[in-house]
Image (cartoon, rainbow, N blue to C red; front, side, top):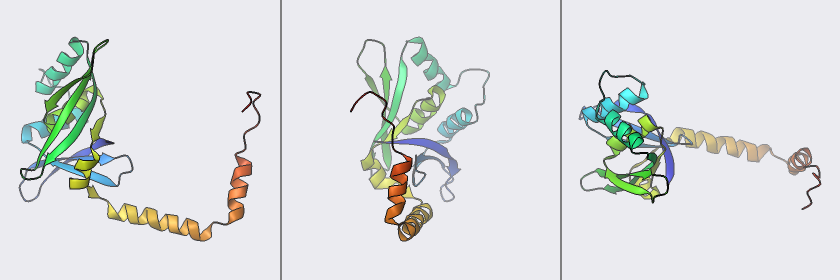
Length: 174
């Protein structure tokens, strides 16, 4: 599982359909998920921290989770049906003294709720392998920087590093 965060929303130029974009921690893998207009609005409200006069559906879901004494531990986007381009997600709720509760949910609703409850979003490696987009420019730049480092590094640089980072004996023994 890879923890992802919401990078933002976009509109597909061809279909004019909203897309939520999830990004990994290294900002090199992106997962675009096409969603509905209402779900995009719910995600946008959470991203922009816009308060509405009456609770919207995802605000109601947030209140239910909190009032029932549960916590949204994580969202897991775990499967992709490639034929229909349908993603599958679970909400993982925890309640004191009880087993985790997994609830099937659409990824768009899961993301909207995760944003409201500050819960992490995870995507399975299998889903990422099937449909993530890589930022090749960033990856290539990191590789080039590493190659430059390797070309310039000398063995004595490592000895110097080791001496700088030696730990003093703290009396605890080893």
